[in-house]
Amino acid sequence: MRHVVIIGAGQAGAACAAKLRALKFDGEITMIGDEPSPPYQRPPLSKAYLLGDIEQERLWLRSAEFWAEHRINLRLGQPVSAIDTSARQLQLGDERLSYDELVLATGSAPRLLPAAIGGDLDGVFTVRTLADVDRMRADFAPGRDLVVIGGGYIGLEAAAVGRKLGLNVTVVEMAPRILQRVAASETADYFRKLHGDNKVRLLEGTGVERLLGETRVRAVKLQDGRELPADFVIAGIGITPCDTLASAAGIAVQNGIRTDAQGRTSAAHVWAAGDCASFPLGGQHVRLESVGHAIDQAELVAANILGAAKDYVPKPWFWSDQYDCKLQIVGLNTGYDRTVVRAAEGAPTSVWYFAAERLLAVDAMNDPKAFMIGKRLIEAGKTVDAAILADAATDLKALMR
Image (tube, rainbow, N blue to C red; front, top):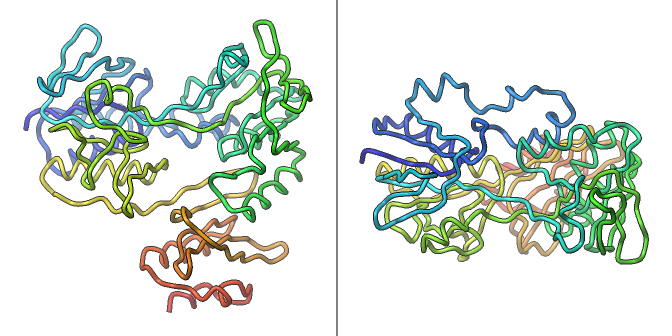
């Protein structure tokens, strides 16, 4: 093996490249990114970076010296247009680049509002890349009207930043409630109150008919006939895996690039990791979108390229920062049939998800102890007595005994 090429210079791509060197791979490594920036952290974009609390250089995952010292060749601002899996080559502009092993770490992209309803107007933004946030920063001026379309975590984080910077913020969610797809009603209730206390207007159960304006958005017309003034709009309506390049190369896709348990795709010598990868878990193929997952899976792929032959067992955890609340999530709540809430007035709150007697996941709001205990219980596969858990007087550490 002489040359490993990684398509994607995000969290997964960077983790894979660094791990190959840590495991003493001495061949050539090339990491290709379609953005001009070096590999950087995405989570702070919609929070600390947008608020102006950190400079751009603090987003970088590694220094320029790291990549040079570890002989990792960065090809930035150069999107790959095609992959030839038979010849083990890819098209990079006018250049044909050969590989011995190829890692697809192409990530995901935000869903866009359709042009037919005004999604192509100026002043309509998504929050995914450094360029996205740089384009919208000037619009975050006190007193301006921001409409956020989508009441998921990205939308709510954008709303929180807007309020911190003195904007008038309205969140529009088509589903009956915010966080409909990702969290229990109790977690949604917590964040509805949090945003209400911070004077965000939440409109649930209503969709957008179209965005109004000649060349730039000036208002949002809802399906119930209301019109909301809008100096600009942020769409937080979900993301999709970047699997088009793989599909065009004949590589199997299934809600992302389909892999086996070790990260191999359907094409020989081609692997996938991170947001773009759909891997087997619990009898089905799933895709996870988190920093921790991207790092863990990419590092395992690096090891497997070098012959480790290990299956990937995810340890899912996620987080969201809104105002002074840090939400930490551990586990996957898919298939839950009941929840247990631990709450006390003025104290941290956590929501625990169960399928029958099995603990699946925990949402912990400003409650790091609940997050850590929940993480240890889930990873150990331990059951928890729901009645004892619901008692606010119960010491969570006792659940580990």
